Image (cartoon, rainbow, N blue to C red; front, side, top):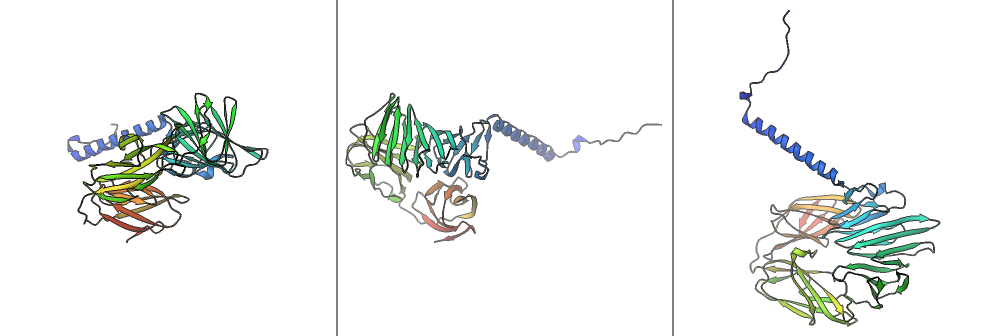
Length: 408
């Protein structure tokens, strides 16, 4: 008996060209996804952070964040992009990028605020015998530590270069690594810190400053405040072709002898966005001409005769606009995602290049008009301000719960 074989036979010349192209596209997309997954696995990079509810015992917690913040897990070397409140265990590293900020609540109730472009390591986070041991190392950048009441068995230590700094109860202290000078800087606005450098112990008290240079601590001096900005006012619009005069006031202590000015296209003052930088200014006014239409940010810090420099003051924004301004700015396709607590991701669509400002944060609309930014809001209603380089402006009242926007 003749055997019969079942099979399918295809006349290849009868397959449509679009089918072949579609199959090739599927193969290419699969290859890209596989390659991307391999890269993420190879670099131990995880897109989402675990929830803070999953925190192990004695772990610190990231309670608030902005921009690009990452955690490198000590146990697995996995890099986690922070997208929601999460935890930080002993040995973990926290990294903030140029637009990143993070707030970490330690187990003793102290609050650690990590500034942009900073790296810290949680060395210890443990509760034993009725007390707590908290220890962090500042590898780069700047952090601020605020402590509450502490028991006698509690210890809160910040390591900066060769120094160990025990933060006392009810203290507000700032620790910074000055890359230009290669030194560590300690600023105390409230409370006190006991600094140990090579066995030399010094208590730095309220409104005092000291630096760590070459394994030694410098003599303490009065803390220098940042200058007070005067003009251009925050969010002021200036007509193109007009000179911009930057004016400021000396700190109240009146010990400043020089000033540092930066003007940037970015609110984060990244290096490639800074358009003007001046140091050793002795007057309290500086004029800049021929600024192109656009949005700018400016900030100042002061310098004393001892070499101490203040923190950068909070930046102010101003806009150079063209004379004509008549176009109405609209926004559509509103989207709101609750990340956790009072943190939201807000998105929508408006005119390309427009500036969208919500709850103190802002972003530029992309070439297709889309925008998306992360905000922190205690109220369900927020004000959305939209502006462009020609001076056009509009305002919306956005309800974060119903995602309903009403133009004002």
